[in-house]
Image (cartoon, rainbow, N blue to C red; front, side, top):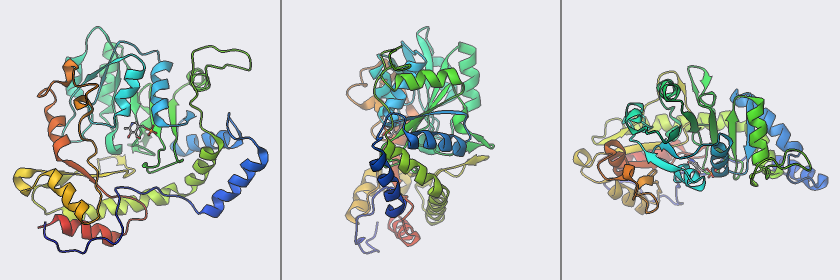
Length: 375
Ligand SMILES: Cc1ncc(COP(=O)(O)O)c(C=O)c1O
C-alpha cells in the first residue's frame, strides 16, 4: 500500500450515526418534559410502534430497549429450549441470547456467497434436542429463507431471524421481517436506523404480540396480574421520539449509503485479491456495512496488514466479524466449535474487513480509501 494520500485530517470511523436536525428533536424533548411521561408505553412509544410497522410493512411489532433483550425475549416467547442451530459469523449477542436462556448453541457453517448460515449444512446438525434455528441476515443480506423454511417445516423447528442488520430490506417486494416465526431488530447507534439504543420483535399474530409485550414489561398483563417471569426491556419515550423523527429521513440516509457502496465497488473492482458482495437479485438492500475480503495470496498482504495500514492513515475499518463467536472462550469448548468444522466461516473471518460507510461520508473520502487499497 503506497503512501499516496495524505493522512485524513480527522479519523474516518467505520460508521457514524445519522441524526436529524437537533431543533426538530428539541420539540419532542420539550413535549416529553412537559408531559412528565418518560416511559411505559407513552404517547411516542405508541405512535412510533404504529409508524414503524407501517414503514416496514409488518403487521405486529413490539419495541424494545435494545436488540439483545429483544433476542432474549424472542426465545422466551417461543419457549425455545435445549439446542438451537446458529451461525458463528455474527455479533456475539446472537449467541449470548441463547446462553442467557440456558440453550446450547450448535454452530453451523456459512455459505461463501452471502456469509449467512448455509442451509445445506443445517440438516446434518439437527439432533433430537434441536428445537429452533437462529440465522442472521448478516450485513443485511437475506438468508435463504425458503430453504430454511422447508427444513424447519420438515423437522418441526421454530425459526427466529436475527435481523439486526436488515432494516427495511425486502426480497422480491416482501419485507424480510415477514419470514420466520419471529424477527429481531436493533436500532443501536451503529445501525443504519438508530434510536440511540433500541430494538424490536416482529411477529405474525396478535396473541404473540401480547405475550411479547407482557414479557418485556416484567410479565405484567394488566395492573395487578403477572403472567410470566418477564424482564424490563421497554423502549422509553426519548428513544421512541427519535425513532419517529428518524423515519422522516431514513430513505435519504439509505440512499446515501447506497451511493457510498456503489462508489467502493467502482473503485475496488480491478484490485486483485480484493472481493466484495454485489447486490442480490430481487433484494432492496439497506447498505448497513461495506465488507470486503482480502485474499492474502493474491493481494500480497493479510487483512490485518490492511487494517493496520488504514489505521495509520486515520481510517478505521472494523474486522466484523472476527473472531468467530465459536472461537471465544465461552463457546470454543462446544463440539460444533472445533477448528476445521466450519471451513467457510474460518476463512471469511480471517479475510474480512468492513470499510467506513455512513450517511455523511464524502464520496471523495471513499475514492481516497480505494486509492489506498490499490497498489
Ligand atoms: C447481528 C446482531 N445481533 C444483535 C445485536 C445486538 O443489538 P443491540 O446492540 O441493539 O443490543 C447486534 C448489534 O448490536 C448485531 O449486530
